[in-house]
Amino acid sequence: MVRASEPDRFIRRTSRALARQRRFCADPVPVAEAVLGDLLGQATGTSFGDEHGLGPARTLADFKAAVPIRDYESVRPYIERQLTGESRVLTRSEPYAFLKTSGTSGRPKLVPTTRHWRNRYRGPALYAQWGLYFQRLGLTSLYEGAVLDLSWERSPAPAGSGRFPVYSVTGRPASVGERDWTPPWYDVPWFTGGDDSDAATGLYRKLRLLVDRDVRLIVAVNPSKITALAAELSASAERLVREVREGTLLGAPHPLLRPDPALARRLDALRDFGGGDLLLPDLWPNLSLLVCWRSASARFYQGWLERIAPDVPVIPFSTTGTEGIVTLPVDTHPSAGPLAVGQGVYEFVPCPESDDGSPLTPDEETLSFAELSTGGTYRLVMSQANGLYRYDVGDVYRVAGWVGELPRLEFAGRGGSVSSFTGEKLTEQDFFAAVHRALPAGDGMSPPVFSAVPVWDTPPYYVLTVEWPRPLQTMGTAEFARRAEAALCDVNSEYEDKRRTGRLRPLRVRALSPGTFRNLAERRSRQGIASAQVKHYWLQRDGRLLRELDELSPTGRPAAVAGSSA
Image (tube, rainbow, N blue to C red; front, top):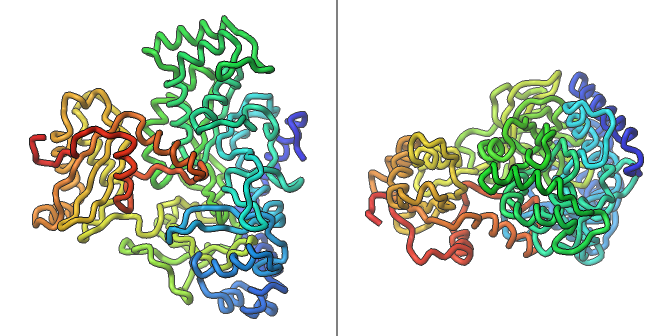
C-alpha cells in the first residue's frame, strides 16, 4: 500500500501507468483480446455463463452471439440474487460491495464491485490518469499539500444492503489491495475529514487545513465541485481569515494549526482588494491546473471556472461512471480522451439525432472501436469484469478524432437528452444561448446559474428558474422572460413554430435567491445522495424540481411570463 512517506515511488508508479496507457493507444488489439479473455474467464462456472453457454466462447463474435444486449432492469434479477448471498452468479470473483447510482425507473441501481475488478481495472486506470496530471505540472517529487483531490471521498464504512455494504463510486471506505488506488493523501486529515454535517462544512475544512500549503493541482469529477469550493471560499472569507489569525478550525483548536497573523494579514489585504471576496489563486498563487469533466453539460461551467481561477488551465477527467471507465486522457485535449481499451469490451451503435434514449434491442447490430468514424455519434454497449455483460449504458459519444489506433471519444450526453413536448426538441445549448442573449448588453456579465424545467399542461410550457443576481434587478423577470423567449425562438425554429401555433405556452421565468441551487445540492447530500450523483442539470426532464425550489427559495410571487408586464 502506498503511503505518504513514499511520494516519489507514487509519482513513478503513475508515470509508468500513463506510459502503459499510451502504448495501448498505439497497439490496442492485444490488450482488447486479453480483456475479452478475462471477462469470459470471470463468467466461466457462473450461473450467467452457464445460462448463456459461454463455456466454448473465445471470440467477440462468440460473445455477441451468446449474450443479448441488456439494460439495467434486465440485469437486476442477477444482482438481486447476489444480494441474497448466492455465489457465482455473474462473476467468479465474488462482489464484496455494491456501488449505488441513480436509476431511470426510480429505483437505485446497484453495481457489483469485486476485488478482481478494482485491482485489475479501476485502480490501475486511476494511476494512469493521475500520471498525466503530474506530467503536465512537471512534478517528479510530490510534496505534502501539492494536490487537492475532490474526485472521491474516504468515507466511513457504510450500512449494508443485506450482507453487503453499499456506497457511491466516489465514497469508498477502504483500499482493497496493492493495485487499488491508494494515493499519498489517503490518510491525511484534509482528505479523511471529520464528522461534517453538510457538504459546505467539508469544503471549508479542506480550505482551512490547506490554506497555508502550496496547492498546485485541484482535481474533481464534476466542475460543480470546484465552483462549490470557490463559492465556499467567497462565503467564508471573513471566517477563514479570522481562523487563520487565531489558529482554529470551525471555532476550535486543532493539533495541526497554529496562529498565523502574517498569512491572515495577506489574505485580508487580498480580500479588500477583491471587494470582500477571495479567489482560489489568492489562497494558492501557484495553482497551475484544474481537472474536471469538460464535455456535455459540464462544458457550460467554463465561464465560472475562468472567473474563480483566472488563467489556470483546465483538462478533462476520465469519462468515469459507476459502471466503468470509458475514456482515459493521455494528453491535454480539452474535452475528449481515447477509449479505455484496457478497461472493458466496448461496442457501439450509430446514434441518429432522433434517438429518444429508448433501450437498444437485444440483437442490435454493433460496431467495434476500429469501425467508428470521425465525427460520428454512437450509443455505447459496455462489458466489464464486474459482471455487466453487453450492458446498454444509455450514453452517447462523439468521435473527436483518433489517438494512434484508438478513437478519441467525447461524451455527448445521455440518449434522448432533449425536451420535446410537441417536437420542439430543446437542448441545454438552446437554453444556455437564450439566457446569455437575455442578459444586459455590453456589461460582460457571466450567465447566472439556472435550470429549465418542462411543465406539462394544456398546452405545456417551460419555466426558466434563475438565481437572480444583483445586475439583473433593474431589468425585471418579465423583461428577462421576453428576451429569453425571443432568443429561444431564434435558435430553435421548431420552438418558434410551436409557440406561434399555440402548441406551447410562453416561457416563464422564476427568480431564485442566489445560492439556491447550492442549497439544493447540500439538501440532497444530507438525504444520503452521493456527491458524484448530485449534479446540476441546465435542462430538467420533469417538473418535480419546482416543488423543491419553492421550499428553498420562496419569493411570494409567481413566475413572470414572456410578454407580460409583471
